[in-house]
Each structure stands twice: as C-alpha cells, then as structure tokens.
Image (cartoon, rainbow, N blue to C red):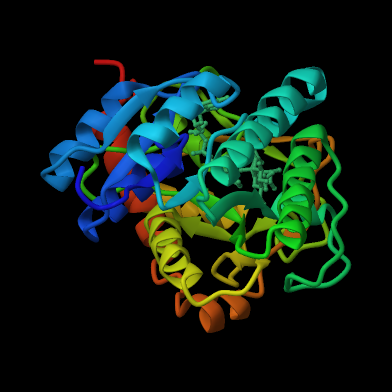
Length: 340
Ligand code: NAD
Ligand code: UFG
C-alpha cells in the first residue's frame, strides 16, 4: 500500500462490503478488519472482482488490542470507517451483555488505538434506532435520543463516547451517520445482504419468500395509524448509503469536531407498498398473512435528509423500484447467499 489507507472495520459485512467497493472505485486504498462473526470472506473476494483490485484483509476481533496495535503500527491508516458491531434488535434484548461487550468494548479499543497513533478522522455507523419513537416527523438531528432496546443503547452510548472524546481531543473529526433502513444490493447481483437464519428485517424476508425459501410474509400489524395500516419506514438503497460514506470521508477534511448526520431519503414506504413493489420487480407472488404488531415497533419513521445534503453535498438518488430490482437480482442469482 502506498498512500495511507482507510481502515474499514466490519468491511466484510453487508454495508461494509458495498462501501469498501465504492471507496476502492474512488481511488482509496482500503484495509478491512473483520472477525467474520456475521459475514463471509467471499464478499471481499467479489468486491475485489468488481473493483479490479483488492482491499487488504485482516481477520481479527476489534476487542483484540494487540491485533489493533499491529494494524495501526504497520498500515498507519489516516481515517476509519467503523461498521463492526452486532445489530439484531431482538437478540440484543435476549443477550444484552454480549451486545454491550462487543459493540462498546470493541469501539473503545478502536478509539484508544486511533488516538495512540494520531488517527483523528472517524465515520461511525449509527442508526435511526437512537431516536426511538420520534416526537416529530420528518426526523431531524435535533430529535431527542431515546433508544428502546439494548442494541440502540449501544449506538447511543458510542455516539456519546465519540462526542466526549472530541471535546477532550480537539483534533478529532467525526461524523455519526444515522442510517434509516438500508436495503438493496449492488446492481451486478454479486454482493448483497446475506442474513444468517430467519431474517428479522422486512426486505430480506420478502426476498426469501419470492425465491421460495419461505412460505409467506407475516405483516406485523395492519392497524397502525398510517394510510394503509402497516408500518412506514424510510428505506435507503445500500449503494446510496455507500456513496454517503464516501461523501462523509471527503467532508471530514473541512469539518470541525463531531456531529450527527441522518442518511435517509425523506420518503416513507409502507409494508404493503414494499410487498407490491417487490412482487412487480420479481414477477413473483408474495403471499402475506396478517399478524399482531411486533413488540417495540413504531408506526412511522422517516428522515429529514437536509443536513446531509448541505454538509456532505450528498442525496439518496435511488427509488424503491431500484431497491427491489437490485435485491431480487442478488437473491435470484445467489439463493443461498454467499454459500456456494
Ligand atoms: P453486518 O453484520 O453485515 O456487518 C457487520 C460486520 O462487523 C460483520 O462482517 C461482522 O463480522 C463484523 N463484526 C462484528 N463484531 C465484530 C468485532 N468485534 N470485531 C470485528 N468485526 C466484527 O451488518 P451491516 O448491516 O453491514 O451493519 C453495519 C453497521 O451499520 C453496524 O454497526 C450496524 O449496527 C449499523 N446499522 C445497520 C443497519 C441495518 O439495517 N443493516 C441500520 C442502521 C445501522
Ligand atoms: N415487518 C413485517 N414483517 C417482517 C419484518 C418486518 O411486517 O417479517 C415490518 C415491521 O413491523 C416494520 C417494517 O416492516 O413496520 C420494517 O421492519 P424492519 O425490521 O425491516 O426494520 P425496523 O425499522 O424495525 O428496524 C431496522 C433495523 C434497526 C435499525 C432501524 C433503523 O432492524 O436495526 O431499521 O431505522 F435501527
């Protein structure tokens, strides 16, 4: 590696692999650190195939301080995009200690290594889940932080840690990216989301129904105070999200301190609308059954994306039709995900 690389933690995962591809194509050298606890090295092999060059890959756990020390002293990254973490809401309720340990301890170890090596540029994967049930819509960054589950608490805590760290270390420049609902896949159909076991999230579940791996989608609640009674979310194409990270990295140079930024489209889509769009994109029927509301869910959630437009000069460009078409191509060509 010649120029100082970008360190991408969790870069073998869903959003990390798309972002790694985007950074390689933009000319960055990329160093991925991942323990493969929720991903496959095949994703990075395919990223290399699409980009025409490979990221450096270090298989290590973020909580392994010696491994971090080796990575920082050997590669001297100039900036960090920090995706690595556990992300299943329901699992975090069952196993809170594991979530706090992995997400918070892992982040602390990373931040200490960054400061020890004078690496002062950070882009952090946060989530709209930090807003809990919002007081007003669309949600802007001044909305209060009140997560409703341990996973969301880890994101809120790590945000707090980075803000306090920035107060103590004025050289630090950080962006706390609060993603809304990432979906979709690279348009080649070569990389995409590969959930282990039964998917928790709507679009991966719908696509497994479409490909015949599951019988029917359960709609969690048809009596929400929304136009068609089903939950409304702000779905964002993973390629838009990847480009948002590229824009964030570029914006760090001119930034002062640390601040949160929503990454969403500003458009709400209901569960029924998403099912209809996916049926059209895949030319498959998507059987549904009405089920009770899921514990912890809210009616409606969508972003005010204005701050990202102004600060990062970035806007989501892809619509729900493209999100469904790209998810379907990935699912159809890889019915078992990265397992060959
Ligand atoms: P993912 O599980 O596909 O990717 C996370 C990666 O981190 C995986 O490759 C996993 O192996 C790795 N990892 C986890 N713990 C690690 C550790 N201790 N050391 C090293 N590697 C570790 O998830 P994703 O959907 O790509 O999400 C990336 C980030 O974005 C996460 O922090 C997640 O919380 C956040 N986020 C995701 C969503 C979403 O809906 N996908 C929404 C908002 C925020
Ligand atoms: N839904 C169903 N059936 C399913 C799965 C989901 O009807 O099988 C519904 C949900 O009730 C909700 C909508 O589809 O109305 C979206 O649900 P997801 O599980 O896909 O997404 P959430 O908005 O609940 O949460 C996701 C991630 C969080 C992240 C949040 C950001 O799981 O980690 O988006 O807004 F923080």
